[in-house]
Length: 265
Length: 231
Image: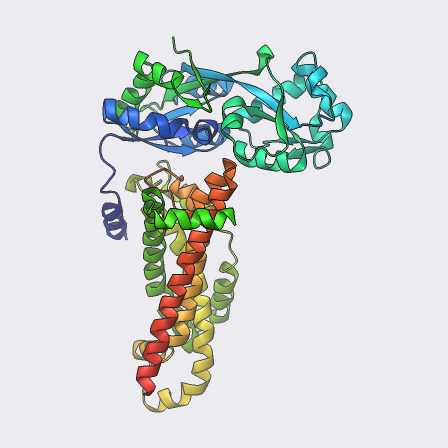
């Protein structure tokens, strides 16, 4: 039986060479098209071929803890720091940032245009009983959304299934649902700009400092996961953090707009 | 309409990304189908013509497994193939092989259960003849399969349909990695989540066309062979 599986493995893994790594990633970086632009540059400069598995940040971290990735690229700082503290990563570095925004129907039933800050915005949505589509999947965006509700002293789960709709899906799928239902959605700006099914949806709230969205990069530690391709993972991470990589990130634009702002130190 | 013209454009311009994805879909599902058929057809046949305690339960189990959600199969195969799982040393997670394994698990019960039903009907008719001719065991399984070959192709097509169309299992064990494990269904899911609904629908139209072609081909061969046989 073991021999059979090894044969199957050999037959199909011929194209995975020494410089191939798996990146466990958040969805926004894929849905916004960043990887299609960035990965060929990485391969050209370093020879490292990065295979990206894009899932929510929560799932990406869990997958990496099962050793199913060589690099973690997500956006939920407390969870990332815990990942490193638990020994799954040797270090975590800031990579780039953008921000979260709230989108909703043009009619703006909760009158977010008048909101003074994000706490006010969240309270307005709840008080108006306006629909809000949540990721509901423990992703980085979902974690951020929960801290915002908490800051607004609102427990949205009381309205679950009525005005608070937890899709349990990725950013794009949640935007599709939200736009179709005329609901408000918290989304990262990059995914929203690149999103092609906006319909009646429009950007209604932005600019609060607590909507800052930091992305981090962590090579998975060989101490916990002896199978990781540490060398290539390190090359990949260092390229992203290098001047070349940071300049490349800054150069990615959709409709003339810069989506990610490099801030590696 | 936009979607159909987009599908048409992708095909006539020989869009290289599309054909890469399409080819991987075919490679994965056909490989899974061949492996499943080799296991499932003899198994279904054998279960139809032998009698042992627990046989009914086996058939019941096969029928129940036909309804297993692909995402559950994906999850089980993922946990097995994960680097920290029992088969992690194979390094198969996020490869086409992982997708093939998941599809084999998914469609083997379908082909086995359907072929079992086909052969059971035949068995009621042939039992006495085969018995008097002394055809038993492995020879009987082979004889039934040859005799029912046309009906069995429908069972195989049902398996192929399920394999080529499912997304839940392959997206978990394959990871939808561009140029490595992205197939038609996971590409459709991705384009939908990017809001590119026209492109997603166009890919759906292409997949449907592929399914039509495969079915036409198999049914064509079957008709041709049947005609020659009785000519």
